[in-house]
Image (cartoon, rainbow over all chains, first blue to last red):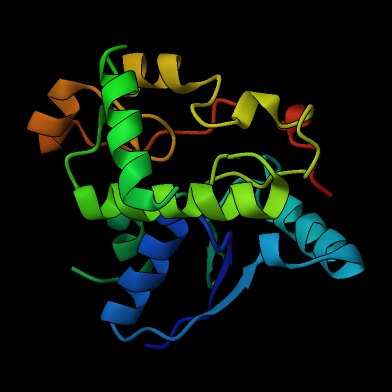
Length: 84
Length: 111
């Protein structure tokens, strides 16, 4: 079963890197926005979108289908993906 | 200053205060490298796991070591980034839990 996976991340954040690595290691494609690398209106729009899913606007904010996961919590990510 | 020099300098000064580096040296060097990236980018070592505003005064609570390190290490055995940890945290992986963001959302002024 394929999943729609998207990450709001920071290019400098170790938890964000761990999340991306976990998905890559498990062969799961994903989209991401490194918000710290965005500027101007693009950055404002990305932050407004993060706030919709995660009012604290912390990173990583991970969207798996309709689920929102904040931070790198491998157990929760596995559960959301139906992985053992 | 390169990342190895930063590692040695901080290890000495911070361990003396009771804050230990995560035993995973590669992870620590990666985080320290990102601190150097942020210093290059913003002019100050803003926490690499938090979005900096670019205004040093507004970000003074997240200059590393951040204002939340002490409470986070006391409560969770680790700071938000897993950079600074307690000796128990290093010795017992069962203690490794997600450290939630302690910084009040209103302080996050990066837009």
